[in-house]
Amino acid sequence: MMKNVLKQIFSFILPVTVLVLVPLWIEKDFTIRVGINLIFGLILILAGLNVMVVTISSFIRIGKGTLAPWSPTQKLVIRGLYQYVRNPMILGVLTILLGESLCFWSKSILNGQGLFLSSILFILLFMKSQILKKDSGRNTGNIKDMFQDGSHG
Image (cartoon, rainbow, N blue to C red; front, top):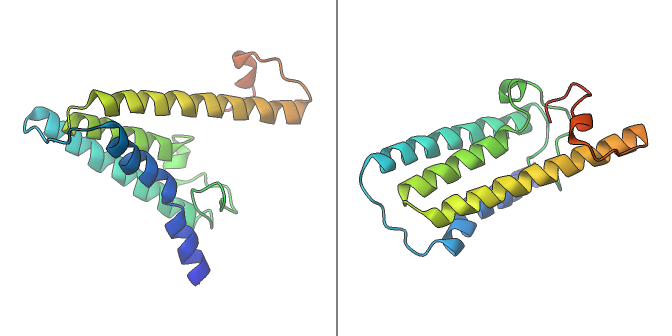
């Protein structure tokens, strides 16, 4: 039981790093500016947190694992948000980062979000390419070929 709890706690290393530590590192001015941007920012942060809570609880309850690559799920999660989006956790993180950039009116956090998104897209395309290569024995390098298997990404 304790081992499972520790796994769940350690699985938060990745989102805490991206959502807290990196913004603290790249942004020097955390002045909250009251205005419409603060309201929209808080709404986005709350929406993103909701997505993360639902995703993490799905991993625990349905998948019998965590979101961390070192302790993956034991069952494929295809219910809940995973019915509609392949990577809802990434969607939640991006939504929170956008909310943070609005709350603090921060170009640095917004640029960091763009870098995070670009990195994730590259990694996902690379992984898909490697899976296709392993499954079919060939890798054409053509992005169009990667998605002809009927999957979404």
